[in-house]
View (cartoon, rainbow, N blue to C red):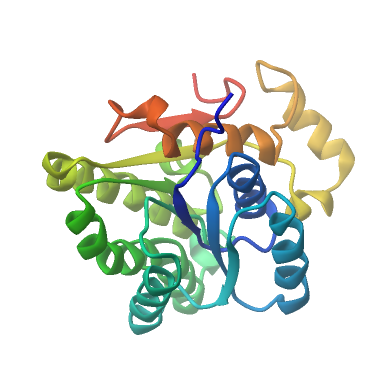
Length: 249
């Protein structure tokens, strides 16, 4: 059977670990040429380059800060020059700086909005010209169920992820006539390096409150990204797909 992303080129931001890494691996396995970004973890990025290369596609990691407008512009230009086109972009770069509103600093607010939301604007703005020229493309933005329902102690994170939803729906409306699709994946509780440091008793309590009785894996999110990146989802745009085991029901 042909691989789902054969001869496609994808850019995944923030791919050195967690969900981004899972998506980059899944894409490479499905025949995609993958460009990815990382911010600080040089060693992890080199390791990922090596891991992805074994699947036979073209792979390249770029050290780039998506929250910097000019850097995002330079990144997209470099990727298009190197790979010749850009079929799929996954805006995944994200951080948390949690705290109750009464204690949240302006710095904590700005850092999360810039990294999580402004980066999506920056990268989408930069890639628009290429996708319009191609008259095709799939933009996949990683949101969160917190962006749909809110969460105490995460006003900055929830606002950034809710912003991604409004932005993505607007892009779907603006770019649809050129066959460019834009969707959001809203993960629930996903096991990553970040959650590994949490108290296991707390993790178990969370899992018990989820209808499917387990935390999600990065592969659960990557499978959804694969669907949205492939031609299987060619009539789907402007949607928010929750990957949350039924938490948001």
